[in-house]
Length: 354
Image: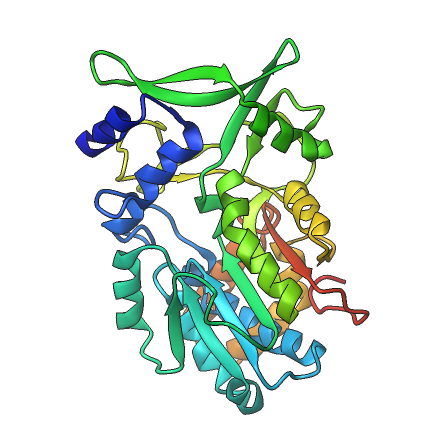
């Protein structure tokens, strides 16, 4: 907490997104710089940790996407925010079953946290993988960026409309060093930024992923230049609503937003319609946004589970299908999680989205 106070000394009033960005990603005291957030002993569990089947199906989808691009000889696959490396570990194993794809592909991990990078390097021992902090190394061949629960971990700006005036949610320190919220009039630049997205115009409460778009912009440039696409799997919504979705999670339970700073996860729901609008304006084609349930079923997860279950004991089978239920059921992740693919327009149907 003291480190955050130092941050305030330099910046008297701080926008919510910049403040939480510091809380999550500061190289010294940031949440992702000092602890393992994933798994039973962490604060939350992601799909790859629920079932290896999830990662296997993503691998098969990536190979099928490569095939839809006519099997390019130089294909770049980049995972965004690989977390504990569980997803990529299984991808690499699955890709071995597709030697032609493996031979023609380059594999990259895009990771901000030095702490997580060290953990990933211990888990994923493969000489073909390169860790990136930017995308300058990728100069030719189509590129596929994909992220599972990547975008929700980038803090959002929050705005409120009062009597047709737009205010931004900010934070400051009071005299007792307590963090307090304050609304300040939005800058002309930010008002213009919000107005550009017409889908937000009718809302009284707005969440806007300015930092997220800044991170994704160079990816869009790469896709526009080299071909390929960006696939994001995340929890979020399509229909616009006045929603304050910012939340803190600690030990798998909701936590007060300003308590345990640097020791709890901070996320928000992804506005998929806004993402679609962003990609479309940058001349990428966005496939129909589908639920995780729809996507995984379309790419054959049930058939794969049935094949695997034939060689399993009753106990193993029960475990397999319980985990599958968590991925697919609407009471768990099935409908809340959405899948978006933005890519250079192709006439072919893309598996999982039709």
